Image (cartoon, rainbow, N blue to C red; front, side, top):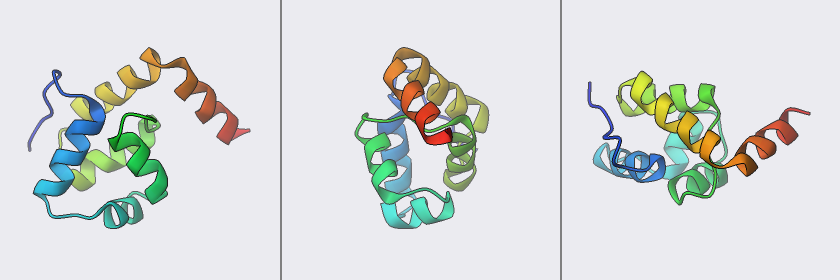
Length: 91
């Protein structure tokens, strides 16, 4: 399995890997049961996936889930607004 470098941002790693696998945003979003809009926001660094979404993306992208989920959690912790948005969706 491939891994993501800690030097890469989550969105950059996601976008690069998706393209290497010749997947469209729409296809990856469908496979991960999320909106294409949210996937694009993640790729552009405007949103972070939940841990469960990050795990599903890692599986679909054949990336080490531990490494990818760690990057996703770092994004959530570094940007409190992302946590608030996830909390708002769960309400």
